[in-house]
Length: 412
Image (cartoon, rainbow, N blue to C red; front, side, top):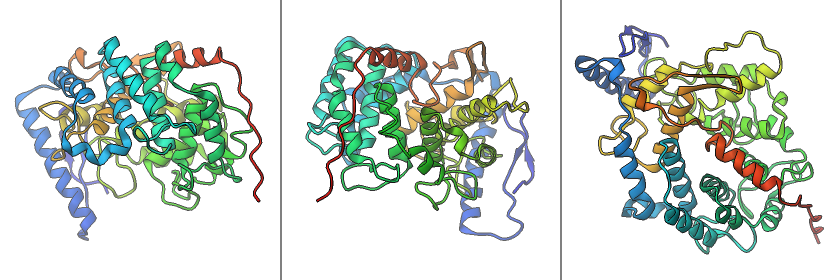
């Protein structure tokens, strides 16, 4: 769907949609977004040079720190996602290198302890039923805080019982008791289990094979076997397989082809599915796939890999986030014209971090677009917390006793 070239701020050749004279609702929406993005880029280039691109750090920090203490009525709909709000804000703050006052960290720990269920796992708020999604968010938030108080909040024995209660015979996991099954639940379970030293072969027997069956003909991963490939599910599936050391079960080249095809040739950001619009949150969900694929293919001896960067246009993604996803009042958003929120703030910043940092170990390179102060802390591509915090959590829980699973009760 390549079209006429357009000159962007960074000099990269942009290709607009060409619908070949067949207009549809999808092509009309895509053209509308491209028009808005074109206006943003034109306005910037008329007044600035690419080296002047700025991440409005102080405004984002003000927005985030206020959100930890006070939320507007608009967030009532997220009453069952309060651990997520903690995680989104805390992770954004750590990427921006903003230290968390001890009193605030302790308050967050106490709040999350009230979200922990006597059955194990965490609910979306105090007194709510446990669910794997807020369990993942709560564990990540506590690992970001990284204090003894934070680690002690997690009841590992009950958490293991809870994870085991959700495990299905085919290797998949329920999201909650009597709930749905999809790839998110497998990733959430694998992530919290690996961070807290509960990654037992028994608990995850058959899980990797079930995830592999979710890779479809497109090359991406759907929520369950046979479903459309989706960026969020593809990240969750790949990251879970990395944790389980079973990446080889996927057709990695097909997944790579699908994932790289999701970066929009004009906007520079990523879409979540084929023929969908660009969305700032996929700056992490899609771009986060590429480091995982890079490492997996490198481990298989793929000699065609570049040692200079990830397999996507890192500068184009940074351009999109810095120019199109920043709210002037602080916070980040989906695309121009949308409202800011903590979810998009977290995942836009996470994607920006991934696009700035390449490699691991002895091979590490940074490419920071705009002013040097735009640099963020790196994020771990599997857990999406900083590598230091992930390592500290793993070290802490490795010192805890290995827990064993009790057999499930037989059905009557």
